[in-house]
Length: 166
Ligand SMILES: C[S@@+](CC[C@H](N)C(=O)[O-])C[C@H]1O[C@@H](n2cnc3c(N)ncnc32)[C@H](O)[C@@H]1O
Image 1: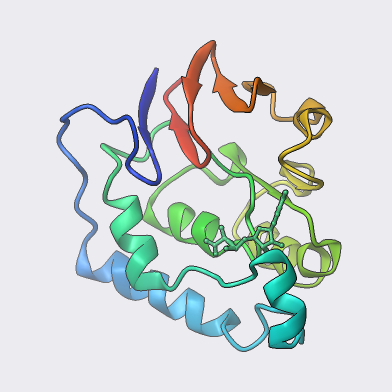
Image 2 (image 1 turned 90 degrees about the vertical axis):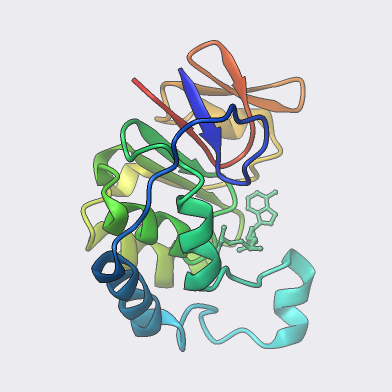
């Protein structure tokens, strides 16, 4: 069952979770560990080509607080350095149910994979590819597929960055 989209689209009025100050602090600390290296040394010009501007923890926390709880799986199809997924795990999502897709293999290999595998995400959950290409969704994300420009999970339509309750 779809509970919400990370951008808050299409959600019904449900009780949202509130992250504790301790969890918020941990999310910020984890972010600060990677902030200097999160663009794998790319300059602004290179980053602009793919829109590589990563979400700061203050915004990530607000996005996570759109969720009802931390049950189910979570996917970031343009995961960049993995900040959103890292924060989701710290908030309580099961790392084995966290998935990421990223077009830039350098960021993925140098930053995202080391960062997220350290938090318990299986390497095979992190995929190099174009999330706008439907073939990209054939990989190990069993509950998701890309159809008619939309990501669907468990036969229910959801938007990018959605959480799907098992
Ligand atoms: C705005 S950043 C978002 C990163 C991450 N979601 C966050 O919140 O920090 C967008 C990322 O999407 C990647 N990207 C752009 N187009 C993509 C595509 N078609 N498929 C997968 N990744 C893509 C870029 O390389 C970049 O790392």
